[in-house]
Length: 237
Image 1: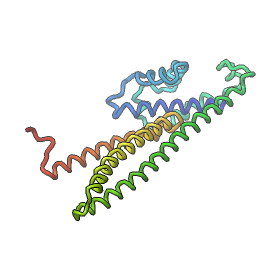
Image 2: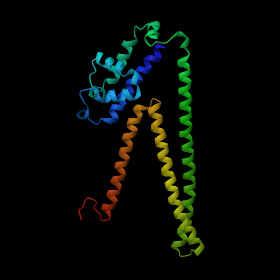
Image 3: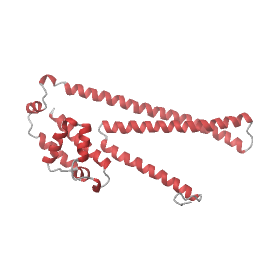
Image 4: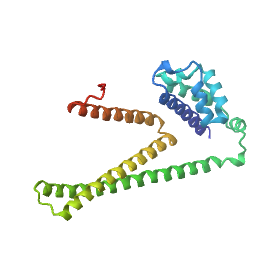
């Protein structure tokens, strides 16, 4: 029970830090108060907000900036948790949390509920990946057929009915790309939600940064392409 409480506090602090890092890019954006910390705790852990703020202050952590940009904050969190629970008596802990002995099985029920929710979400992630794989397989077949007809077209050997088929395949290819894009977006949404809810917060921050980098890379590729063909997007007409 005590170990579970320690882990719970430690991961709560880690999630708080992950939240702040996702909002603040540099120390200059951080406040000298717990403005975003209180916002996070009020939304995710309202019943523990006051206790956690008092705990941070008691151990010399005074604002959002320290939590987000102190490179040693993880070690400080670990020290806080160890000190808080080093001399805690189990009975005293139960009294403090107002848990009666007849409710001792409650954590097990909570764990089972947690595991069931995690399994359900993981199944959705895998199902979406399978749908994505099937759509890519269909798309591959479409593009192979388009290639076959295009080769005949280049040789001016297409019959009218084959030309109509080529046009239809072109339209179907566009729809196929659209379906793949939507499934990919759905997968990313499920993935980020899974990370956020099941202790992948630290990985999630890096993943979101990678997505921003991909967006910038695509924008640069379009810029280079237009520039290569004499189109300067920054040039005023």
